[in-house]
Image 1 (tube, one colour):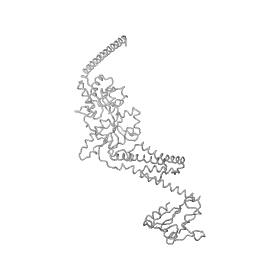
Image 2 (cartoon, one colour):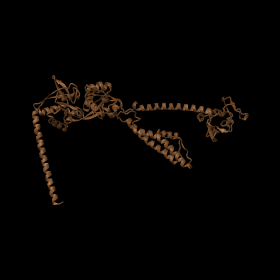
Image 3 (spheres, one colour):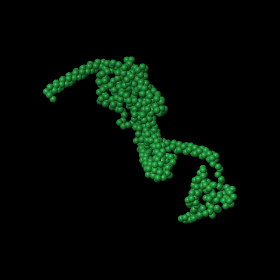
Image 4 (cartoon, helix red, strand yellow):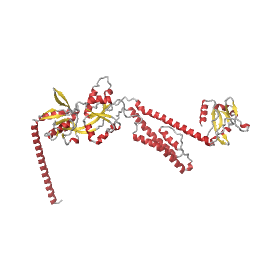
Length: 574
């Protein structure tokens, strides 16, 4: 860097320093002028008498008569008294004819606009619609409007069967049930056609679908794949189901064991979506926001709203307890109301859980700044704002709002009870599933009857009537004549002829109609007792009839045992 550059830098630094010194001097002059003006205003303020209005919003602000004189109470007037002690002015309380914020009626803002009051000492919502008519002070805090409701007797989570998974997971499980079966069937068909030398069986699509559904319910399957690819498909689905059911079982156990309590509404949109009824103070920030903000008004579409002039205690008794309405109010007010109700139930005979009649939502309906208000062009606006800012920054306002409340949460959502017994509500979905299962099975049964009836009528038209093998044959061959067993009360033909019609086996005939086998006790009477097709043998100390089936293989029929009846029944159903 050359000499000229160094000189220029030095000049710039000197100029900057000169500018900074000039700015400091100017700031000091402004600060001094401000202090002088504040001193002048403070001296003039000692001789002033103001009219102060407020809202009935206990415990933040309210009025009462003392010796026939209306006086202000609450946190708001504590701050007014601090200003009065510092500056020495006097004031009187002017109660609005209507406890609301309306500017066109008889509310607080109307008094300021028409000059009936100089100051509004209350935690008023800062709303842009009133900026042209009044002046707000510095924000005291950020107000929250929450929902107070009667504590539900049971958690609103619903049936425990749905609890382990979210809605998205349940939908994906349902989609997998519908998709995996056809995918397995398609891959098996593709593998069979590409690898014909394996001679692998092709399982029908319904069998693949039922395998997927049965695996989800931890049931076995009659399908036995023989190729590596199909075995991997089946094993993959089994592994998936094993992991899925393990997570479901663990989460279901945790849900039924832990004392987690939930409310029927999880966000402000649920109030309108589920058509709940709610009440709030007439002329409050909720009502004004609904009037002025379209988005906020749309949130409550579908719900029933009420605006009342009653106090908070009266609203709890008349609306929340009796009519099961939701009460929307400012959080400090709601907490005081719930705390007072709790303290009125301090009888030792009342269980701890029964003392908490109400519950407050953890989320807020409306969040907006709150401040004092002055009439337009109020002379001492800056002076009052200066002291209010000190009160806010020192934390006095926040402290005063919760001065009489305990440090712990009042009747929290989860009361922390360790006792958790299985309730009937947890099994509600089980009842629904059982009922739905019976209805679906009955519907399917009726459909099967209709289909069977239709097929039987169609079979009668297409297939000639088959010869009854259990009546006397018209054949002239005496050897093939059926012999009546009077003792058994049945007629049956030669064993071999029972399985053949016109040289064809029954299972090979059109229609696949299988005749029932002879009764079990008939095996011990002629002609089966002397038939070459049935030989009585003793195997492992038990008597069996060794007979040949229609397929050419040998079957063992137990003799005179309870299992014989089961054998007869199972063969009759084949």
